[in-house]
Each structure stands twice: as C-alpha cells, then as structure tokens.
Amino acid sequence: MQAQFAVEGMTCGGCANGIRSALEQMQGVRRAEVSLATKSARVDYDESQTSPAEIIAAITELGYRAKPQA
Image (cartoon, rainbow, N blue to C red):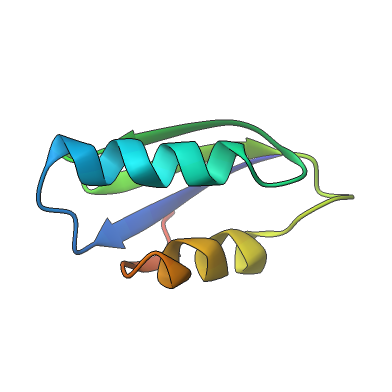
C-alpha cells in the first residue's frame, strides 16, 4: 500500500531526513519519501504490519503534525 501525508512543522532538510529515517525504521514500512518543499511524505507500507494512523502517530511523536493527503 502507499499513503500520502501532509506534514507541517518542518523547517529544514534535516527535519525531512529525520522523519524519513524514523519512518523507515518502523515495522512494515518499506520506503518513505519526505519533502520539505512540498511539506509531504509518501510512504510505501505493508498494511498487515502498520497503518496510516500508526504512521501519523510516529510523525506526531517526532514533534510534527501530519494528516492524510488525497
């Protein structure tokens, strides 16, 4: 599965890299792309191991705000 999220609160490339790194360490996440320019994250994941809600929770724990994006 693939999900796209709007991410608020990033101020630099380090923010985006930190979020990407944290997401890619989550069980079930195959790949994460985080963009400061578009303030978004695209995550490829295994729906049997994680969910969009868990991905949003992980981003929130890092101090950012995330919501599903169409």
